[in-house]
Image (tube, rainbow, N blue to C red):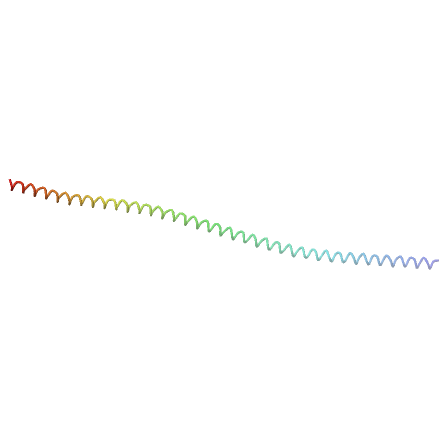
Length: 132
């Protein structure tokens, strides 16, 4: 009977050690899986951080480009307004100059025709005085 108790105790000890070995093996496997998961998550986190930094850099670059384009547009717009104003002034000056030249031509034509008619009138008057 004592032998039976010893066998039973040894069997029980053996089963418990096997169970403990299985549990410690399962626990080690679980810890290993957790370590792999944590390392994968760390790599993905680093990749996300890099991508986020890259996207931030792209946004800052695009923002700088946008500000530069806006400044260039405003400069071109201002230059265009100045040019249009100068062109308008130049056209106005040229029209006034052309009007003055036309008035001068009319005055010259009027003076020429007046002197011709005056000469004809004096000639007719002299001929009338001579013929009388």
